[in-house]
Length: 268
Image (cartoon, rainbow, N blue to C red; front, side, top):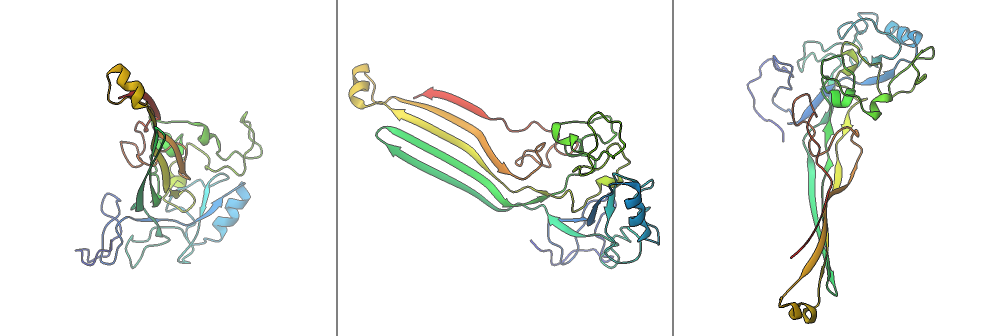
């Protein structure tokens, strides 16, 4: 959905709280962020990157840049990384990097029956959706330095330099930057934009109806035995610490109980 009219004469792309703001021509759900060059594998690589930004480097985002930190791209060529005035006329190095609106939602029901057996399958999903975890999402980033911090197995894939004393050893190609920093590496950016499209086997039910010549002997018109499963399979490229149906729900961005896999048996 594109907004045709909106009272935003300054062309601001964020409101006073830092949330995405509307303006004429904006597409609802747009995600603004930086373009990521990569993670510096050593201090020299970071120094070389900052040398290409003679007018302030990345100091508008933070200080103390070193190995394991994110290198951002200077899109507007002004020799520094910044948000500018956060307006359409001066957006610094920000650009639209995705859209959080679920697009092409689908559901598919399949039904089959043969000689007393019946099979019902229900698939649902979203074919296109982008999702950028907030800088406070401990479910995505792991250790962020706040009182509420989560650490799951995917979070162990973080940058560790060549001379590290960490028992896990070096990890120069880690997916995550070095942990417990001030938030400069957790900016909205292309590297960590998530593909939240998914397809889920929401329900599958297999049943068997006994022949009537048997059920009549039990004084029953019909007897069906069945087994049913919920949320058995999910196909998605979303980070393993998120459920594609519950992203963006709950406090601290993702700290909510995921949908459970359940299997039930019964008869009717």
